[in-house]
Length: 256
Image (cartoon, helix red, strand yellow):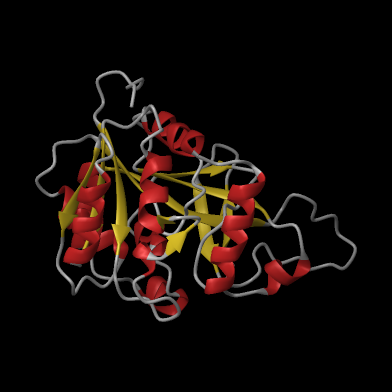
């Protein structure tokens, strides 16, 4: 990693739980000859903005595997098994880690683009933001109506206005041009360290409990959250079929 964000210390954190309803032991499932967490870490460590990368896990098997990869700049950190969310897990992981900004990267994104991490770090170099995340255009009706696809609405300066599983904005009048109005939230977050610690100390708010979206707690307490527009939604791994999809992409583009 070659640092390019001035005197700000920026770290990447990859939460990696063993438990998964659809794919138990997901971080260690093999994808084109490598455990998934290794592929994620190898991608993340290419981001020039990061000083170091932590894999925050609750399972010794994952920690041992990460250590065995011997990827320069990557280390495993053990965390409690009873965290209610990945946000709480990364907060524990960085509690004693000196940093100004941390970027929470999902552990099931083996094709994570280092450039997205760098772009989020650049946004956070601007002291106006407490957090930053990303969103991509919704391109089909099925995704628009799918409650598993979280919708994001943000202002002209990038400030997040709301996130919902419902269709937002709602188009009241049929025939109204809604091109470019609907965005899909991408689950990657950058936090100012002190803001993250404040956030996890806050109890869940009603909006969060209703929608089951943690980011609504941040908005509820007044977070300045930037939503970075991107083109690609990424390729997450939740099922065995997703593994085959990622392997096909890797083989097609001769990924290392």
